[in-house]
Amino acid sequence: MRSYFILLGIVAFTILGDYALKSAALRASPFATTWFAGGALLYALTALGWVWLMQTQNLAQIAVLYSSATILGLTAVGVAFFGETLSLRQVVGLGAALFSVLVMEAEA
Image (cartoon, rainbow, N blue to C red; front, side, top):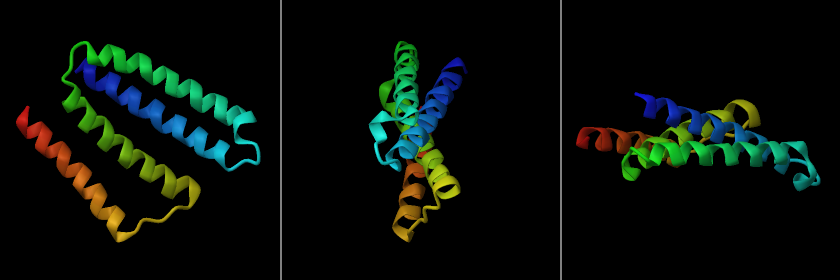
Protein backbone atom coordinates (compact mmCIF):
# COMPACT_ATOMS: atom_id res chain seq x y z
CA MET A 1 0.00 0.00 0.00
CA ARG A 2 2.92 2.35 0.77
CA SER A 3 4.07 1.88 -2.83
CA TYR A 4 0.80 3.24 -4.18
CA PHE A 5 1.13 6.37 -2.05
CA ILE A 6 4.67 6.92 -3.27
CA LEU A 7 3.50 6.43 -6.85
CA LEU A 8 0.63 8.84 -6.27
CA GLY A 9 3.13 11.44 -5.01
CA ILE A 10 5.34 10.92 -8.05
CA VAL A 11 2.36 11.38 -10.36
CA ALA A 12 1.21 14.50 -8.49
CA PHE A 13 4.68 16.08 -8.59
CA THR A 14 4.99 15.20 -12.28
CA ILE A 15 1.65 16.82 -13.10
CA LEU A 16 2.45 19.93 -11.05
CA GLY A 17 5.90 20.08 -12.65
CA ASP A 18 4.41 19.81 -16.12
CA TYR A 19 1.89 22.53 -15.29
CA ALA A 20 4.77 24.77 -14.23
CA LEU A 21 6.81 23.95 -17.35
CA LYS A 22 3.81 24.56 -19.64
CA SER A 23 3.27 27.89 -17.88
CA ALA A 24 6.95 28.73 -18.42
CA ALA A 25 6.73 27.74 -22.08
CA LEU A 26 3.98 30.30 -22.64
CA ARG A 27 6.29 33.14 -21.52
CA ALA A 28 8.65 35.14 -23.75
CA SER A 29 11.78 33.88 -21.94
CA PRO A 30 10.67 30.52 -20.53
CA PHE A 31 14.02 29.48 -19.03
CA ALA A 32 14.32 32.68 -17.00
CA THR A 33 11.07 32.26 -15.09
CA THR A 34 10.19 30.96 -11.67
CA TRP A 35 7.76 28.63 -13.44
CA PHE A 36 10.70 26.87 -15.10
CA ALA A 37 12.67 26.65 -11.85
CA GLY A 38 9.65 25.29 -10.00
CA GLY A 39 8.98 22.71 -12.69
CA ALA A 40 12.59 21.56 -12.67
CA LEU A 41 12.55 21.27 -8.86
CA LEU A 42 9.35 19.21 -8.91
CA TYR A 43 10.87 16.88 -11.50
CA ALA A 44 13.94 16.46 -9.30
CA LEU A 45 11.71 15.48 -6.38
CA THR A 46 10.10 12.75 -8.48
CA ALA A 47 13.54 11.15 -8.84
CA LEU A 48 13.62 10.58 -5.08
CA GLY A 49 10.26 8.84 -5.22
CA TRP A 50 11.36 6.68 -8.13
CA VAL A 51 14.41 5.43 -6.24
CA TRP A 52 12.29 4.49 -3.21
CA LEU A 53 9.70 2.81 -5.40
CA MET A 54 12.16 0.86 -7.53
CA GLN A 55 13.68 -0.78 -4.45
CA THR A 56 10.61 -2.96 -3.98
CA GLN A 57 8.48 -2.87 -7.12
CA ASN A 58 8.58 -4.39 -10.59
CA LEU A 59 9.51 -1.66 -13.08
CA ALA A 60 7.02 -2.78 -15.73
CA GLN A 61 4.14 -2.69 -13.24
CA ILE A 62 4.88 0.78 -11.91
CA ALA A 63 5.65 2.10 -15.38
CA VAL A 64 2.17 1.25 -16.65
CA LEU A 65 0.45 2.67 -13.57
CA TYR A 66 2.60 5.83 -13.63
CA SER A 67 2.18 6.40 -17.34
CA SER A 68 -1.57 5.91 -17.32
CA ALA A 69 -2.15 8.10 -14.27
CA THR A 70 0.11 10.81 -15.67
CA ILE A 71 -1.59 10.72 -19.07
CA LEU A 72 -5.02 11.11 -17.48
CA GLY A 73 -3.85 13.83 -15.10
CA LEU A 74 -2.07 15.85 -17.76
CA THR A 75 -5.03 15.55 -20.09
CA ALA A 76 -7.28 16.94 -17.36
CA VAL A 77 -4.84 19.80 -16.70
CA GLY A 78 -4.59 20.62 -20.40
CA VAL A 79 -8.35 20.74 -20.82
CA ALA A 80 -9.15 22.50 -17.53
CA PHE A 81 -6.34 25.06 -17.31
CA PHE A 82 -4.99 25.58 -20.82
CA GLY A 83 -8.18 25.28 -22.90
CA GLU A 84 -6.89 22.32 -24.92
CA THR A 85 -9.34 20.06 -26.72
CA LEU A 86 -9.27 16.31 -27.39
CA SER A 87 -9.61 14.65 -30.76
CA LEU A 88 -11.29 11.28 -31.17
CA ARG A 89 -7.87 9.71 -31.68
CA GLN A 90 -6.68 11.11 -28.35
CA VAL A 91 -9.77 9.79 -26.55
CA VAL A 92 -9.12 6.34 -28.03
CA GLY A 93 -5.50 6.61 -26.86
CA LEU A 94 -6.68 7.41 -23.34
CA GLY A 95 -8.90 4.35 -23.44
CA ALA A 96 -5.93 2.24 -24.52
CA ALA A 97 -3.89 3.60 -21.59
CA LEU A 98 -6.63 2.58 -19.17
CA PHE A 99 -6.87 -0.83 -20.78
CA SER A 100 -3.13 -1.35 -20.26
CA VAL A 101 -3.62 -0.83 -16.53
CA LEU A 102 -6.32 -3.51 -16.50
CA VAL A 103 -4.06 -5.91 -18.35
CA MET A 104 -1.12 -5.33 -16.01
CA GLU A 105 -3.25 -5.58 -12.87
CA ALA A 106 -4.83 -8.84 -14.08
CA GLU A 107 -1.33 -10.29 -14.47
CA ALA A 108 -0.34 -9.34 -10.92
